[in-house]
Length: 363
Length: 277
Image (tube, rainbow over all chains, first blue to last red; front, top):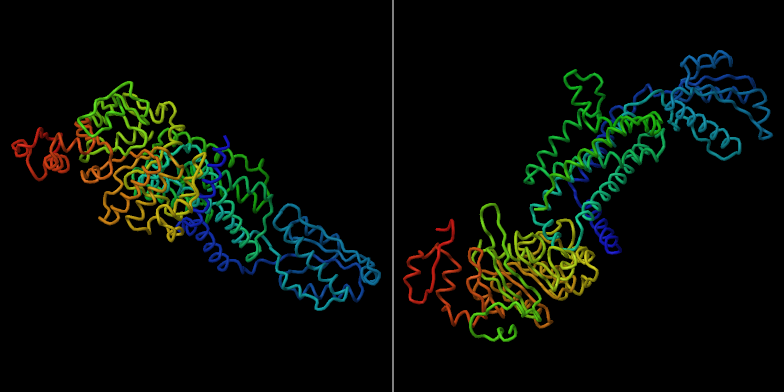
């Protein structure tokens, strides 16, 4: 037992080292996803429609509130509408405002005493917009506070470009790239398996007391960990560079990435069990990966695909992985909301595992 | 009886009772691949502390025999005990006690020499440190190199070090010097002889008569899956005549025809292998 744990730990460390040093793997998984994020982020990211529609209600009517109003009007990441509270809230309900900010009576007077009240209404039907609006309002308030406490210089609001009108291209693309990364990082396990078998590495290991389950298990865990780590790097870039907002929970995100990795790994094992040469395994890997990459909904939506492609698209595990990731990242879906995706991925994993275990050969 | 048989006279007869100093006993070992019989009911003993050579042409069944003893292949028939353990029933326990060098070992491309030694060491309950193994095979300066960047001789030494990583009492070497230049070959011979000095039992396959003669205490000659002779090198040369044996075994049918071989006075028997010529 202790021996198994020791072997597993050593094999896991070695597998992680090998994966890190596997340039092809890093380039096709994280590299491809990052390049896509940057290319499409820059092409579509500075889309002018990314303005927050803010309704402003001034009930204070002091010089301070007028000054704040003109400041907000000068901010080009906001489209400012002014009006009465009832009219603006009605507009928010109708979906014509993303948020409504009310400067309540006594705001100007309260500034001196440190009790300046502001009231905010958010549109709760769209979590992306709500979160963006909240971020924008918070930064406005932070700015005000900084200005009042006399800490120069007051940061210009236009630099706090968090406002999003609707889902941007980059927000939609990010989960797709994460899904694609998970596919590339794990499907290629089959190539490695065939390589180990053809080169006699599996046979050399079979001459040691190491259990096959330890070898395969450590490889699986290493791939899942590498996928999660690469996914974290991708998301960090998306968040920091392109202000992509992760609406849902990180835990659900991590679980779906792990499940997606396992499903892709299982399919990789099927390839590794059937392919008799490295060339065949590489060809199979690309034959499976490329259609999924383009039809799995990573780069563009597949809703308008011709009818004859629908069954193919519906069969692809990446379709469900992307759908689950979009649900979490863009819409804040919990695991219950994406249970169909989760079930299909789990089914892929189980079926592929059974097939690969039946077909597996050491030599 | 078994001790007496180590004296360099005459062909050894197998003794069922002579297992006192035997580290490996093989009885009636048979292995088929489809309709081909790779190993055809062979029996032999390997004594503790000796270098035992399995000599024979390609396809004679040397590697298959070795791989069954190593627990990589399963025999169709027969009984194999390694260090007292039934290789089929106690495979992992037996494998923990043996060291194995396969023919032409390729290793993980992405791991350095030291990392590879440490990894393989972790598979065993007890392991020798990578640094002391590297010193043993004079490969310290290549500790951070990748296996594929080593020369042929260095790679063979690394494969040998991997076979020693668990400090085994029994080491299997499958054609350890094939493809090496004469100098690397001599170097490896010295290393193998040192293993015997350290009390290890070595089983090696080779198709070089001179290698078997220089290294082995006893030799079994395999041909077409059968042991056709088994003795000390001196004994074999005495009974069979060195030259005819070497030529006949090493290059079957390619250079000299079987009839020509039969015509020679020193040749007791010449045979064609199935599918040869």
